[in-house]
Image (tube, rainbow, N blue to C red; front, side):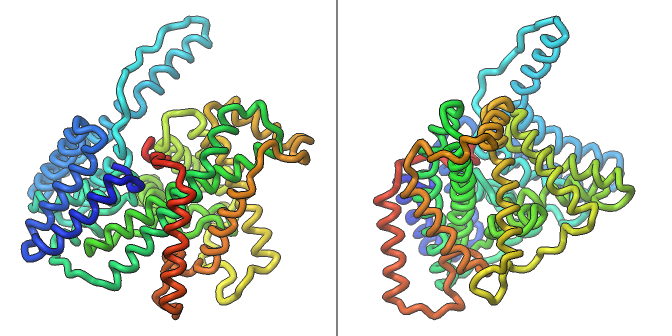
Length: 478
């Protein structure tokens, strides 16, 4: 079920009404409703894949209970290994098997001994990368005795499958989200209203910004050899805003929807294109995944402690693994490797924690140094996005070569006036609200009701007028 679909527009108010008017007095009933609604939401794509999420949830629930009573360290490690094997095993089978099989066959072909790759004709279950990491972090935290395992099976299964963030995050930690299913939840009109605003802004970013940019991005990257450097650069810029509008839009809708049910999800994006260096960008982009890899991969490897070689090794591991998480393609590995190259000098020179405040705080405009830093950082991300979007490494290098050719100074092959205007509106709105959680957060700003409602109506009209149909969110494929 898509957030930007008629089905969801019917589904959400029905679940909301049942949640607050029928099951409010009984916490177990509320959690059961959330669980059932989440399975309906997920099963709308393909009911067969429900068995995967149910099995994964059951394994980690039972592993947690066994870890509670088991003190033998060897057996505790065996239990944790069981959780990792099941979760990563499913992820590897559905997402990476064909990649490794084809890469293995290609390696033999290069050595002059061609073999035929054994492919599996399977469909990647929607959201498997997200809920796998979420439930896996529970087992790891219980193993490390950071949290107590739960005996409430309904609450645990609801935590794993909570529908607003089930298929594309934010990837929640058990320590933050699970306790919210233990507590009685009271309806908060202020939070609900702000949640509706965040949903509206998320829909605007997805339907108006991302989906309109996608029309040109898909055309340009499908036949990149036919376009000039100027058009390819514009196409890359459009992709940068497509993926941002698409993914941060999903996160806004997810967070806003959760607030309607009295549940707080972690922030996933913090206006990343206003970053002044790559380290700041990664603190603001896909925050839930970045912090997951930091806590469960980077720090256990030693983090930034130890020798210079260890710091370099850990940096490349974390970024390359992050790239591989996004997809089974050499382009994603190259994207992760390139971001590691960007990040490494900042870490080695201890400049990676310089920009931790809001850019141009208490000022209307940035100074020239801040503007230059933001533009330079954005340029670096654009080069990386080419690898992320390209179908092959060969195409990515071809696009980069053309962008840095004399054709960069020609006129674009296509007309992009509407898209440029929409992106400009997005940038201005988020710049003005860059110290807020989202662009429509007005809790500390006094704006006349007529002006606010007029703004909401303009956004709704834009969504209806410029909406280009039901397009799936980009991160559903990951």
